[in-house]
Image (cartoon, rainbow, N blue to C red; front, side, top):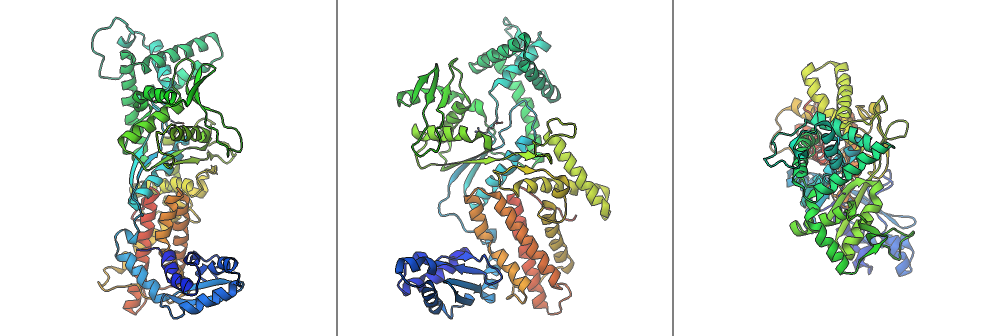
Length: 589
Ligand code: ARG
């Protein structure tokens, strides 16, 4: 189905052209004065300048030209030159019935179906997931779902950090702890064991221990770090015993990561990582040199990325260190080479901490300069802010340590469980299950409802509240509608939404009609918070309507079923939208 704003513009266009004005002035917007009108067209104001006329005169001409159009209940010219519009109730009811009967509730397909890579998650292998990774997972998952639901071919890639110094650190720490392992015997000839020499629990302890050692400001600390660097280089150049350890680390860590992501309802299509890009690095470097883009600077190989329009000078992108090692940027560039070859995406969306802004500016510019991607390829960096505690600093445990994701999730679930048990309407077991679903909604919605680039404060009490702009409130609205529909039972097949008879009912209909627009805009702007804003507005409209209308006791069956159909549509729109946020609704709460 077409978007409402386009349909309105479609009716205004012949009026504008018929009166001798450019068609482009016939644009409709949502009203910013809902007390005065539902939609407005400001085209007469804009045309006034071009045609040297008074805006109000143009507005009056347009209004006269569309008078009698069945789409509008009211269309008026208002000083200084606005065109205010209210939709006809029957027209709106028809549109809503159309949505209710259409696939994906009448969602319009994008003009061009794109292949889109969403690079999100970004966990580092062998390091425990912490809350910093939470945002990447939650926001990226939502962006992926939005694009896919619109009809794009979207590929989500976790892009693991699986090739860095952490590997060398683990190898050397392992050597110190278990020097007798065959990986450390240079004369060992046999097969390496299938079984990893550590469990995930041990691995999670090995890495921080090693990393702590390497940071020590002592002779020993520096020596350990050097060993780790050498081991990393050896691993990267293919030394078989270290590759074998690397595979163990990958296996053990991946199993754990998958479990963690799935508890967040986050799924990836590709479990690739920095290591997969390695085969493309030497070709990449050669071509950067060949094209005359890369040059030596203090022993390193760099590419200039400055552009005339830059407000301040940007540092060149280092693609090879003086010791020959590749860097983070090299790996991201090589990954683009790989992705171009395998998927040829029309768009890339990277969901990463906003502090990596410069890194991605460098990577995108080099990729375009070097022709790895064409100059008009959409390369989007969706940088997100930090999740802070109430003290305004990155969120920590009560003891002041780094908060592990698992622990955060279980703390939220526990708090929601207690809240549910306060009412004591369900069994303990059901409350536990429900708490998991509602807890996840609290966590995700609390995050997604903020503009991604902004830092936000994790406020448990507010996030789990059943009132206000929260996940639980949205779920509560859905559950409430479901229970009304259930109470009523089967509806007759001819049930239809009729023209609204109250202000609250009309407002709910108008909210529902925004659906198509909101989904398209939210994805184009990679802005899940706009979906949150919409589900919140829609939930409020539902609750206001429900509060004002005695639905189940209505005696006129046609009227009653119209209202039930309206809230049933609202329920479907809400559930569709929260699914795009990666949130499910429980049956009861
Ligand atoms: N592993 C990185 C980190 O923890 C994030 C990876 C983001 N994606 C990318 N293509 N660089 O900072």
